[in-house]
Image (cartoon, rainbow, N blue to C red; front, side, top):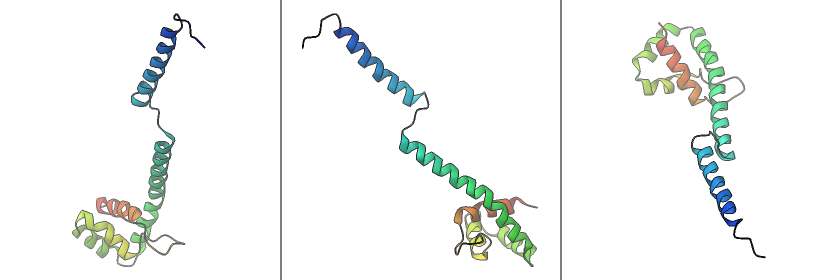
Length: 116
């Protein structure tokens, strides 16, 4: 099959336009692959869970008998050790689970450290 010579420039233009459209779309147009979209969705879901569970952790911390003494100890610890302090105290262990969630513990510790 022979393609007429008048059609060849149009075909090459269409190919070039498709390539340019893909480059612009993925670079500046906000297009993402399925894998990137799934990764972003998982990160958002994890953050939503931490946002929902951190106040429960804070409440558990504040309801303990010696909350003020524990708060002083928490504030004495360095910022990177505060999450571990909350984990060891058991406040980041949510009902129905056997182990603490480190992301919840970190968010809980940050909230408690900012409290007065």
